[in-house]
Image (cartoon, rainbow, N blue to C red; front, side, top):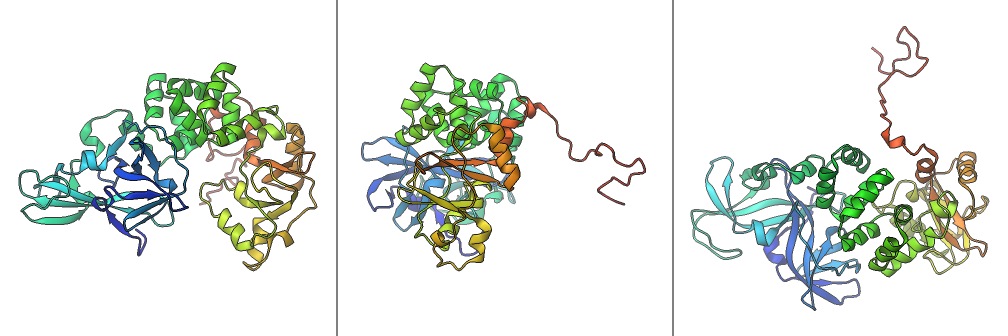
Length: 437
């Protein structure tokens, strides 16, 4: 854990008010949602169950929590107000973990869970349940109540009775086993599962994780998985996908299904996808993402670096920022130029990005065909490029990974890549061996 990272016992969060960035209360915390892991690894905290003023309970992901302070939870203000539905891999902390009988590993003594603590991992936005407050002795005291008997706080690994292996096998155990896989690797696992098993694992993934995995799957698998989800959940997953990937997936569906799903999505998310679907797939407009880093010319280098540090950005999108006149969301005002990440590192934090723009390279036209886009990247050694319309407004950015994805054969994901194989033409005496002796 990071030195100085606050440890919070969940009993202090029961009923805590949840506020948006403007200070307006949006609801209260009614539970916490965690995902158990194989063995005695601490569970990952996925988010909070928040009750709105309308009594509806919704799910608030921890990625949208910007602060947990005394008596309040601060959010990004972006809420999905669809009713919370618990998934197979999820456990409710208040409802299922507190007041539970577990055993101490060292003594095999049965104890009652009175409270658990959560803590944020270093240099990340992930949270874990890391410690357990227990009471020795028999009988239940009820969550948060004082009870007779010795109490102590122990590490999560010091108790047994929570782990997945004690609840049998199934999709949830399989999912926990592959938790550390990159999305592309997990997609490969799903691709080779039976359709039934693939559907079970997909249903158990949270929206963000499933969105990342869908982006790496062949189209047939994408359509199959999306078709097995409830329509509201399918819309949530499409919202979590990059707009260009969501547009590509929707383009493969019947028109009536597309319109129904777009209607269920948040209006601003659906608008981005609709704009992308207006372009042919193998053009700069069809390839681009509508969510690059856009800054006004009076923003500083410090502002730009803060945006670049966003862990949700791909390396290609974080490689440069685009400077535009207001509005600074695509489609923007007049596009002024690009500032590359390396240039940001060379100038003082107070420098205005408007004085650093590189306006030598012509941006891409949204109708530019894929070979033209690929040639642009190869010629100028770019990892991302702006797409600008005839009025001079920035529409989005194309990244090199999207170009490669569309240039490779349709079945490229079926290819087995063996990085340790001897390359063709290697010297028979072993001189081509990278590993040496």
